[in-house]
Image (cartoon, rainbow over all chains, first blue to last red; front, side):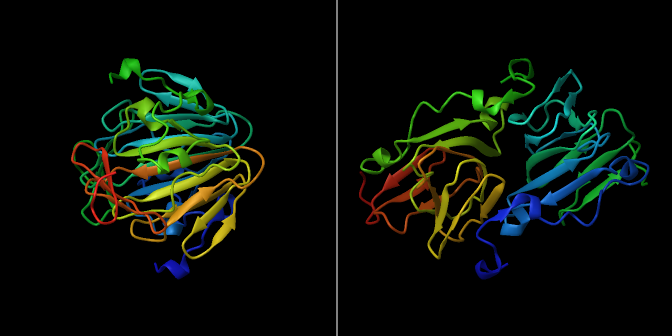
Length: 159
Length: 159
């Protein structure tokens, strides 16, 4: 992307939604209905980390409960009242609250149990060699050398 | 930092301000008066990238006009009406607007020319071997192997 093609700045709410709703295989992809990711960093040509504006309809979640092996994550709540769920506890979030997830730390996801949409900024770096662990689901993710995720069952068989 | 020491989530506005107001040598450090950086990612043990809640009093700026050689940056405006200034143009920002700065791209900084505070989320990765270029100031920054910035004049002499 040339500098001339990039906007100087945008309203985040105007960023187009990601066309592929989920990278997960079924039956997990369908569980991501109601989650709308709007990539922001990509619009400015960023490659070292990704930033999404993620909208969660009531009942939606940011991801399956998961942890990364090498990539750190950070979230900042802009709207709504979603709940951060980890493998050791949970906490109700409000606009202005934030959390971070060190690679190899707590498994986590954010679930919208409220009756109104929630909007979250999500940041994650793109360190190569990452993998995703899903404590509650029969799923393992490995980041391929092309940057695409490869999902298998925990016994290594493909979906 | 052990998992037990980390909060699950915090109100970003409650994060303590960074104790050292600026890493720049004088006379540049004094120009950062009115800029208050509240590290957020560090509170959760993140190391791959940094996240700051940065408050700009009227007249303050996020940094000198600069570009990084290897690290990407992203900003999201939470409050106020600051101005993004680059070496090719400028744009007035409002809450909900964002911008990103690819390493090696436009030189940039955000200046608060308004009469009320501005609050911004700033994200930058921590790729080693980075350097900082300052088109309008006699300053060069090199990231040391210990992660600390080394500032010199453009002719290489120290401050």
